[in-house]
Length: 454
Image (cartoon, rainbow, N blue to C red; front, top):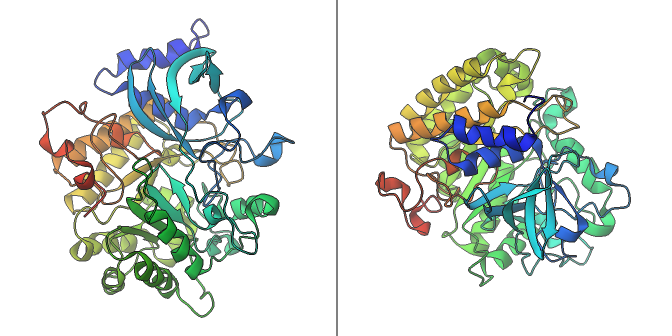
């Protein structure tokens, strides 16, 4: 960015540089890499769905750095719309950074997103569900057991400890174990959650959630993940551990709501067991494609299963689960982490082209999470990845997804254009024509056919 231009000028220059990319994608990706801050005036006391820190911190600013300020004052996610850029409704996961150039504030009675003090979009805070704030007898809050994210997704993490950390083999961008330590300091607000959640409690809270009759926050999918389990927990392997929760959940809520289960890569026979138990989507997160970077960034996964076996198991899973029901996460941007990552955006994009071509041509649809650098991860001091990378990667994903006419990913909501997507962690689902366009028919599906149901 030139010293002669403001940050706002720099962001707006990308609208000219990438005329084929929705402005919603450009603004969203910059918010995910730079984060946002909030004024107290923007946040009504208790009147919105706040962060529960159910998995990672997703923050640049540590809770301990906020002093006496309520550490749970910021929302889990939010929507931006309208403003001078005429943005369509766009959902964004909140990456809290008190040094961000973006600020959410109240201006003339409305909540606005400001860039360098200038309003650029209206902000809609997420609605607080009626069960938020309720507790079990021991004080554990319901939302600490199952959180609501993106207005339509229930998310639970039954095991909040990744065992790769015990041997210092964790993924270098991950802070799951540090997040557990962080939330344990707030027992007065959340109760004594513990590292392992009670399966009966998970099923009980989820049943309450799906029965809430509110068209603004219907539960369209349930996500469940855990820290990697290498040694049995209470005598249960990682597969058996997950199956206990799936069984309890299906007993309570039936088979209508898709269950998206995220574990390590499983064999084809193990995936058959998962599907038979009631799992709708199985995601074994690959994280990064390049062989050398996979070994460096994901040392535990590399040692215990290995990249080639991991990829083979993903492809084999499609035979069992079907297209649209195998969707590993890729942490986009981490392939440019230094000192070993790609030095140029072009090199990083070409590596991902190979990834998306191979996976999607075999029925595997990767979903993207833009790398929000978390301070207490190994790579916590890394500078932000260039905005060009995130725009180019979203373009690439959309290009190849469209090329193979892949279905929408079950449980991840509508994809294929701004104003439609419910996925807050990346702009790839917002890529595509405006909803009114009839140019590509499979982008314009009704809600219940648009990526929620298989």
